[in-house]
Image (cartoon, rainbow, N blue to C red; front, side):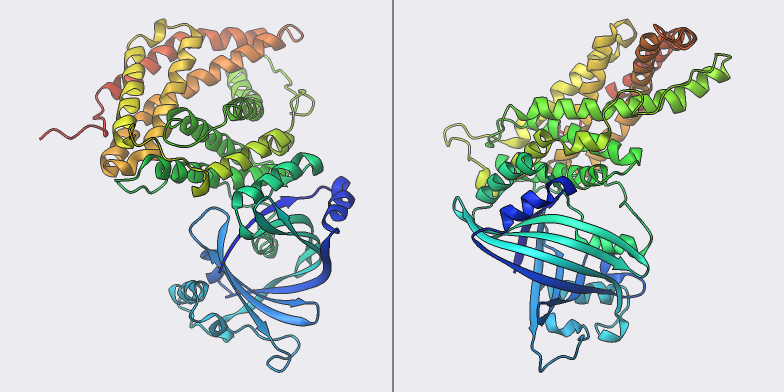
Length: 502
């Protein structure tokens, strides 16, 4: 059995409205008390396998869940435990899931960690106590279950309040389910939350508030992938980075790396939409301005922190005066959480998720077949030529053109990473590695330009900022030459999209 569901955080100010919307039609209420089990060394959590016992009203159910290889898709197997079979409460038995896909994954996780697949190695880690309101409904050509949960997760003396809405596909089209979610997001100020109860309980048990930042993982593509399969895999790869980092940012993470990885994911997605728009998938042109605005708004915090924490100490070390740069709220910048939770951004994420599903893909016309490797080779070659050409005269380019070179270089990198397995992964890795010195040099050059502009604006109110303006601008010519020299290395790189010379 597979489970496909969306989970949304519900703010306290909208709790009554969401609860009332769920408590209509064919609705019901149930008290859910669950206990989650793992080995003392976390063998199941290490494989993202979940094993729980849950009391659902008067009955007990044992459930195992594990990743099913798709975004937001999980294996799930439930075993209804009769009163004659169990005590109160029952003990978890791994063998109850024998003969199922999730049972095999559960046994593999225990075996890999050198634990026998038996009860004695399992201990309770955390509990949940949830009041759930449910509603079965039809939307379009789909049947879905809405579940509004409120309650708490507990691990020892620690507890965490929980308030969320789940929309689970029971049958029919995932597209119709996503369209329902699209309507509810702005109506109830919802935001996608990919953190499962199990993940949050695991963190709580270890005294953690947020998960680790999620970095990009390029898709694995078959050499003969057609256009739609390629796009589906790339979009899924982008969302696999964007969604968990956006969840942490929306949940209040102050870790700059969550924001950084979220921006990287958005940049990768924008590259895919730009370079793969004619591969048989319908992209909405309205996505790009929303993604661009979100990317820029999230970058303002990063730029401001760079100015306060990196540039200002360097200026003072060079003999410049101290300037008291305000924290983010006092600087008039929108907090990252508010940016990531904005309805327009959340709706685009739902739309991209819909586009990543097979039912959303359109095959190209039979008389105009697209060959992804040929098309991508041309696009990679074009970006490579442009970057190499402009690299030879980088120090003579105006700032806006220098910034354009940096953006092209990033597109070259992200596109190359996304499609590397369509070609020769080893040659692609060598080529992409040769981009790193240029990326680092252009990144430093751009950071200095952004900081200089910010100091120039601040100098209108704070004259002491003029020192930083002069210091930063005096370094730009040498920095531009360093960029030119770093880009020269790219001209010597062997393009991986070309056949190797014998």
